[in-house]
Image (cartoon, rainbow, N blue to C red; front, side, top):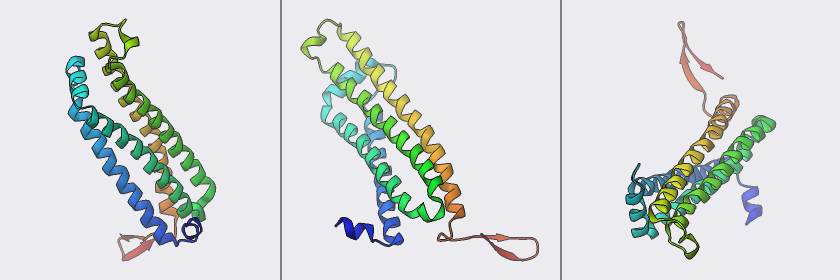
Length: 187
């Protein structure tokens, strides 16, 4: 099976990368929907009530965040195969930015899950008041959002480098530009 994937054409690799890109957006949408449904901004008690009442949905959101990261790692690996002929070292730099962003977002997922642990009411947490645990849970969710967004900064650099590689590639469609005299192909 691995041998077949290694010998796959660039077109099939691009399609597989497209599937993983789509999976990234779909699972990201699920994760954002779950967070938006359960988290009440500025109200730790309501947030804790929502999360504990819908723990399965909250865990689905956690799984969706992890799938976002895993899907984007797959996109990064598949894009390496596609853009290696264009400029291997530049794509390795782009992949570095992407993988750092993925690592930051994977770490952020731990903060997301930590909020459930804090709000779960384990025996060792009995030294805290209920309001304190709820506030800690909301704090972990806010830290998760900030860390996840910080990972997006690295994806921004990745996207800039990918845009340059797309522009420099010879296997993607050329841009049609009309000059003042006559239409010309740019590229």
